[in-house]
Image (cartoon, rainbow over all chains, first blue to last red):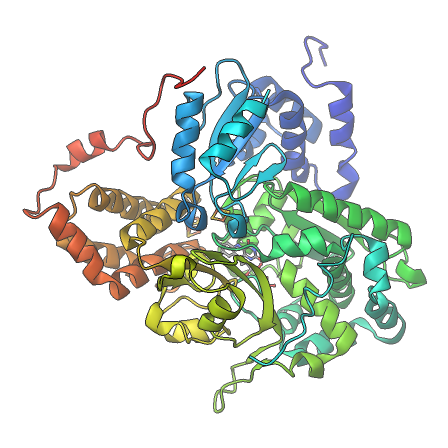
Length: 161
Length: 462
Ligand SMILES: Cc1cc2nc3c(=O)[nH]c(=O)nc-3n(C[C@H](O)[C@H](O)[C@H](O)COP(=O)(O)O)c2cc1C
Ligand code: SF4
Ligand code: FES
């Protein structure tokens, strides 16, 4: 195999390979591998798809097929340093969640699915985050923010570096 | 209601309730120790069968019976999947279990794997539960260290490997065969059944898929016995030999326009009104409920007059809902618009349809288009009948789709329009008195994909 411009670091490759014993097929490692790459690069560029496929002994199209099914994975450019998921499902919507999403759109100047030009924030809508008891709720990277108000959101926006 | 001492939630208020030390101090893993010493796998299957435990994931299928569908004498391997995808809107109970008492779920899972002969278990966990992921992974690590997982568990000849598999934000991965396809590394397209997973599931091997809360129930059935489990809940309907009844404790999630949203525990059969009043602290701002989702969005709506419906496996179905579902209640107060409710519901299912079956893909999409038009003041009265026609014709109940997502899309449509038709008619007549409707090509132009939010381009502040 040519060694030209490998994208995946040895570290990522090794963490993908470390999962092989946990599954009877390599294809089953597709989602975990996509997550590992997405965590590392903020997206899964086409070159990474090719390299994942090679590791999993699949055709790149098989990995691409799976990837494209899940809206979670980005391919064009990395997500912002903070990826925000604002819930728009029924319990949050009924307590003002959609107004908060609009507020975030207005404050950040982007629409759901987009990233601020400075790469700070990617805004997404989410379907039910399973936090309806704290509606309206949103997830910012790994942190769940509960019982949101516009004021709380304004504070959070300033804290996202 | 008489005082009820929680079992499933007994631990969660303790400090560090998620750790092995606290779980063991409360008697945790004693049931597993005893079972591995005293019972063979078939005894455990029989025990769970005799408890009449029904799956807590939505469909209420009897758990012990499901296990007996595994082919007898199969050379293996048998796979076990814990369904921790919890994505049904309104549903929050598995999250609380995994965050605050992961070992209770794991003990039941280990027992269930022992019963079914599975040597490999996967916990399919939705990606948007990062804290659950950390707590469950830490708990699994503790189990390996303590000898509750791995080779020769507690020096028996039973071995079990367990892996958490994280999803990627798709509701359909909760459907058991969608889950299986997703775990195999493919798009989560639900499979045509039969074959059922018990016969041919994950990696084409016999597979059991059970919900997180079902696992916690197994823990307590093993610890306290089937009679204890059957000492609460609703017994089978007399004269219906096929009704297994609704026994045992249940977790109920409460959200929406309530004073005290949260996760609470009660025996199956408590009424929806009791849940709202006694646990939820009543409807907020002193208002009345207009409509209540009884068990996750798919199950449809109860009216205020139907709130005395018992929350057991047969209750909500008797008043036209899809079923008990996940037992997670969303309360909508008297000021909330049913048009907004249905628009929200249709948007969810159109977004989450996997697109495999034409009736589901097109039906959910066109229902959403119609709801958007009605909301925008261009609805016609006959749209309501058209919506009902969609609702009646998509799903596995009418027999037109592969999985139950479409039934879940249909029920809110049917319940909202049948139970609140006046509100829809009033809205249409008031907003569009002359029945004007743009031609369809114009509608398509006016309705670009993402018209749910304003087209903001410039930052309002820097
Ligand atoms: C669209 C759809 C989504 C589902 N989502 C879940 C889910 O998130 N969690 C779950 O346990 N069951 C879910 N189910 C039900 C599962 O297919 C399956 O019946 C259940 O996991 C079986 O577990 P149980 O018998 O312990 O309830 C879903 C079903 C459908 C049709
Ligand atoms: S019913 Fe809908 S979600 Fe289920 S398999 Fe068919 S298209 Fe997919
Ligand atoms: S509806 Fe928003 S978290 Fe459930």
